[in-house]
Image (cartoon, rainbow, N blue to C red; front, top):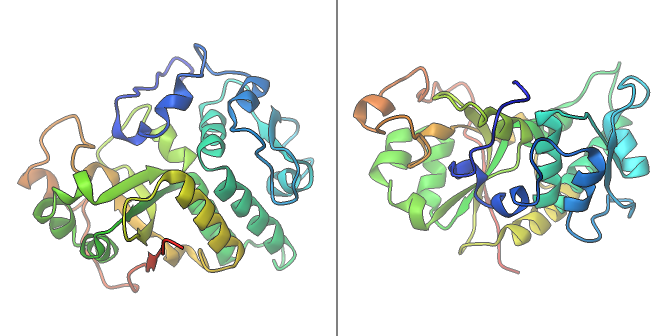
Length: 267
């Protein structure tokens, strides 16, 4: 991705990020400027203030371990990927801190330097994750079962009022610098009794993650072709031929059980 790429804030993936984007100067800000974009009093799970610092030798210390032990998020200058990681910290500070804490806790359980399934799942959500939430359990189950026609066509109107897609994966944000039809995310599916503010989702997901109730393996996440979401593909019609492309909208092959749809209460 070239440094001359530009963010198109009108794309649906940027919903919820537009206020943060307004705080960016032209180009990619340095690490110190990104720290100033964080909400007040953002800390990691050790209570240390989170701050973005220029990247040093990546081989010196484990990335997640360093964040947990110091609060410092190593950030490459003039790098889109790391910029979007910083934006995700701005929007999901508690969830990002909880993911970091779970990474750290898993370090001591790994054998022969191999990452386990928990860390694989954490990485998938962190890099290519989206949160799909709402009060439409039928649509959520259809997504888990890869019934794209039911989810995207029959219940197209539900995406305007009953289902919300929130991008938390910074690699997914990077793909939207130059979007293409087959962009696929890993979705955490949440049934909520009503529309839930992102701040509530951030807090509840962080709490559930720290309690080890989420992301036990990559199978906790469901593949989601993002351009199938009504209104997300802006390079043409989302018609029968569009959804008939099985290279993108692949049917359920029955190789594994559908990902869970988690219930989120309003306690």
